[in-house]
Length: 344
Image (tube, rainbow, N blue to C red):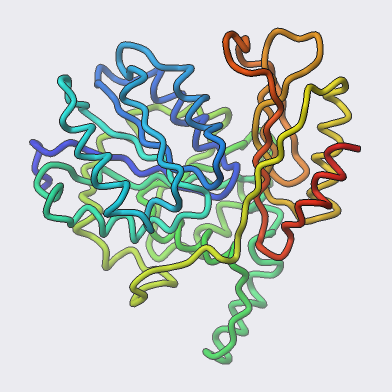
C-alpha cells in the first residue's frame, strides 16, 4: 500500500515535442482541488517551457511552485539539482499536495525513479505514476524504427545485432516505464493513425498499458492523477535498455541557442524552420520571436517539419529579442549552417 502521508509525484515523460507542457497547463487549470507544484527539466539553456507554465500560475499553483532545472538531464543531476529542489518544495509554507515533473524529451525515466529511494526524500514523497506522451502521428509514421517487424526479426536472429537508433531507445524506455500512455495530437493522426500508433506501442510495452488518445493536452485529470502506483517500488516491471548501467550519457544529442534580432517576416522564419528539419535533420526548435511592429512575443514550437506559432503575451519589461533553442542528434548540429538558414 502507498503511504498516503507521502506527497504524490507524477512524472510526465515523452519524446521531444509530444505535448508535455500542454498537458501540464491543462492539469494546472484543472487541479481537482489540489495545491500543485511543477518541476520542469529542459534540454537547452532557454527556459521556454518554464516560461509557458509560469504564465499559467494561479492560486492553485503559484509561480514560486514552478521550478526549472536547466543544468542537464534530471536523472544525471540528482544530487546537485533534483533532491535539493524537491526538499525546497516540501519546505514551502504551504506544502504542495501534488508535484508534477516534466522531464526533458531525452530523459530516461527509470534513473529518475531510482532517485526517489534517496534517504533525504524516500519517506516523504512517492511516484504516483509515470505518464508517457507519444506523438500519435509520429509513432504511426514509424520514425522510431522504419520497420518494426524487420528490426524484431533481426534481434531474434542475432542478439549481438543492434539496429536501434538513440531515438528509438529513448522512446522504448519511456514506454517501458509508463503506467499510462497518452497518444497526443490524435486529431492530426486520425483513426487509422491512432490504431497504428497503438499497435506500435503495444508491441514495445513490456506489459498491458492503458493507451489513451488526446488532443491539445485535454484529458480527465482523474485518469492520470491519483494512480497510487508507487513506481519507485516497482522498478523490476519497468525494463530499460540501460539496466545495469551506473549512469547514461546524452552525447548522441546536442542543443544550441540562436539569438536573432527582430523579425520582419514571421512566415519566412517558419518556412526556414521547416527547412532545418528537411535539410539538416533538426528534431526540435522552440523559443520566442520578436516580430517588428507587434507588441506581443511570438511563441514558436517545432517538431520536425511541423511548426506551430502563436502570440502568447506582451513583451512588457522583457528585452525584445528572438531566441530559439535548436535540438538534434549530435552529428547534425552545425551552428553556422543552422544560422544561415534561419537568417535567410
